[in-house]
Image (cartoon, rainbow, N blue to C red; front, top):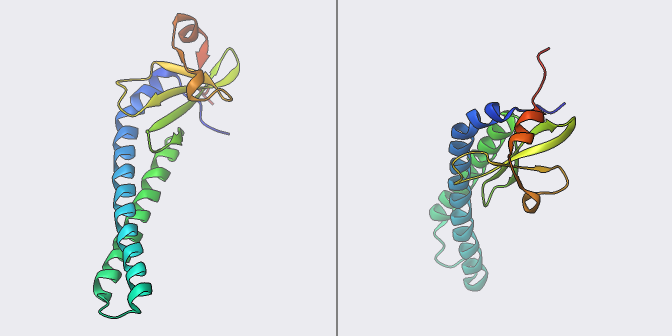
Length: 146
C-alpha cells in the first residue's frame, strides 16, 4: 500500500525532494551530453570508416554516460522511497498521495514552487489542480498510526 501524507508531512519533505530532483536533472543533463558525444562519434565512424578514431574519448564518454544514468536512477529511486510520485522529471512535478473525504487524491508540487498549495484527483493530473482551501485542510488525512 502506498504511503499517504498529511500536508504537513509532505511539506516537510520538500527540501529533500527538491534537492534530489535537482540532482536527477543534473544527471540527466550529463547523460544527454555524453550521449550526444557518442552519437557524433558513431556518425564519424560510419562516415570515415573508423579512420583516426579517438577510442579513448569514446570510452570516456560511455563511462560518463553510464555513471550519469546510474546517478539519475539512484536519485529517482530516492525520491520514490520517500513515498511521493515523480510525475514529470523535466518540470519537476511531484505528487504526494493523501486522502480527502476518504478518497485518494494527490497533493501536488512543482519544482520552483515555495510549497505545496494545490491538490488534484488521481485522474485529473496537473491541469486539474485546485488550491488547498480550509475545506481540504479540514478533511484530508495521511496514514493512520498502526
